[in-house]
Image (cartoon, rainbow, N blue to C red):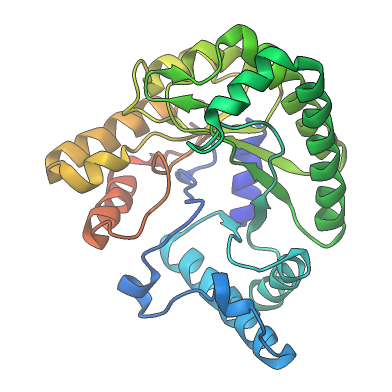
Length: 317
């Protein structure tokens, strides 16, 4: 099977395939440390000539493929292209280089996330004092996301990571009741719209999702990322038993341990995640966020080493 087929098999809760459990990171930021290269991103696109833009898009595509080949990823997420046209061109370039080997995704959320410190108070007041207006805005956000999504799917994209964060380490920012009013119906409509396009949908949120887990699953994403086990009450064993027959799980390897833990603590965390995430399939191995800048490369390579040691499905599993 191709890496794309392995990803789709996990996302659609197909039976586990003999071999290593699929793996991904929504971002692998340690490209300088591993490949002595960096992605073109941010302000470098401003004022770039057409020739420079084409060159930078191609170099980004080459680096995405290099990362995927070296780290055995099944999904490639482009977070570097400056616009929709760049995303579509990057997918085309990657398929030119690697065929249809990987599942391609980009950001695609339109729902309310935890507000930042500048507008948190006003956001909370508006929910209480102008609920109908906030729901109208939520609907418009979903409409815009679906319009953009259609253009990207028509351009060759395979799916979306919905990266609005809903939860803190102690629980969701909104109470479950408020979440059911201001987020769940809009998330459900967004995911249904993407699915109608044939897209695969990964819902990401950090933190303790347990109070809203059933609501998230009811919205019918293909997968939930990132099973943030450093948050309160987050145990991949419990989550797998509760919803593992309804949704693919992605994540579980604790990012904070990768910085502050011992190698044995990291290895034990990886063993636990693989032991409880893999049974029956419907699991993709990854960290609880991304392989972030500043993380010692050897710590992340240990995560992949543990996959080699403990993350293999036998024939006929």
